Image (cartoon, rainbow, N blue to C red; front, side, top):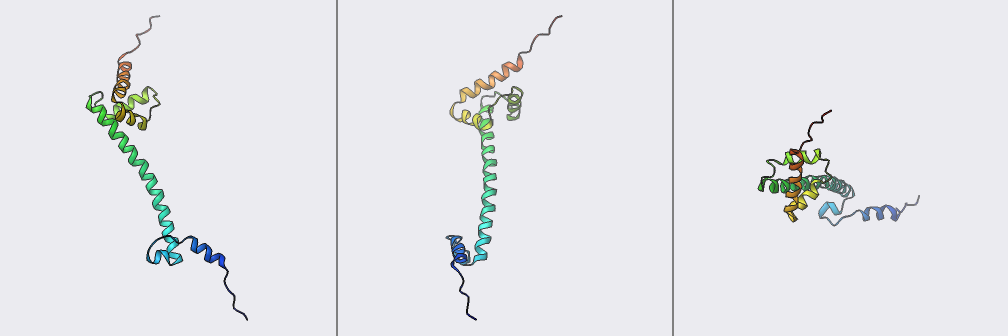
Length: 125
């Protein structure tokens, strides 16, 4: 019986997945597959981590500006008033305002304080 010569398709598929790594990670097919899976898991984890880190950065920036002028005693009260007023400013936009134009952020927070202090008089029937 004649020997079967393997085709080029499997070799092409394996060659395509070879990364520019060192040692077994660029030579052995099973190790390459493990490395690719691990890279995908790390990429997903770090994308989630990046979202978390940026949210922390935004909160820190907003909190620093708010406490500097003593507009609010805490970040949580400011955010609570934002939600009560149904404001559509998210933390990213507020942080950009805090960095680029602090006076605008003070005006926004002062508007919340004014609206909170003002209450409708009772209706007389």
